[in-house]
Picture: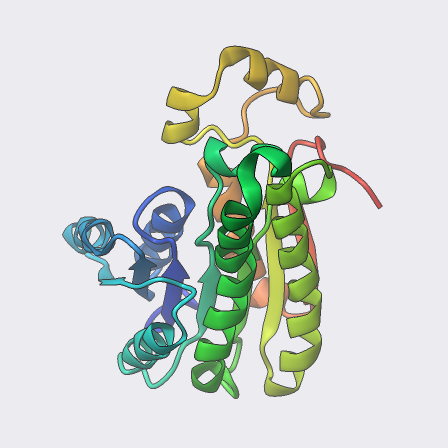
Length: 250
């Protein structure tokens, strides 16, 4: 029997991309997944897809920066199994719109970027904490980015803050038996990236990799499954770079 059988996982940004892929993988292993997305229709559509495959899933709408709403969402998620076993802080802003120079973006856009990418992690972690403490094997996985390790953008700085928060929360929540880790994906050719990324950019980034070839969505899913599992029981406060070596460093 899978270790996820009957456990509850909450995934923010769960309506598409990595978030939906995480939900599909965890539900296939027996977890009840709660997909949270600012687009409630996308969250429910993703949950319906999982249910059609025989999994247990709930899609709910909510902005990860809204403290009251996230408290409601976490309480609702905890009802299924008396608590929350896994929180994946995946929601974030990462489009071309938020990857421009700060001088071009302006204060309002930079503030929104940090509000979602950084304070959203804080908001959801605080909301989930009461429902996770004391749960055997409880774990939080944050999604950072290879951009955090390369410097040069406000987006990268927001994801560097996520890596820092991972260490801080690992220290603070360890006493409650909650491990906290992060994943920094490199260039991962999801369906959206394949359709939007200029070929020249793809070639430039891949030239920086130590492993040739494409990074795939499954590579990030497997990293999540490891960090959230009992196989990683002695791992906390770490950020796992899944970048083909592109963002390697000490």
